[in-house]
Length: 126
Image (cartoon, rainbow, N blue to C red):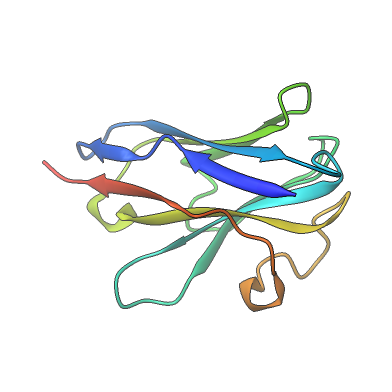
């Protein structure tokens, strides 16, 4: 299984951006997928997770009113729609395979995850 993020770039404060996480290889539709981010000098933080069915979505409180996770299993792609972006949202955004089927209760623990994409940089600046 391989994960490839895309969609990052420069956006003005208050703007929107949609990130994509494309899965390929064996069991591409087998895993719940999580989105995480890491700012310079800070620890990686969990943002959101979605089950294989797309029916179970979890969010960190810091983004739940601004970000929406979705999944297109026909395309083996998970999206993160981000709105009302702030300069503090500037970070490298990563997707990761969390666990089979559902996010579970420990999806935020990035240290337990071993399958990551390469990341995509989001810069929020005027």
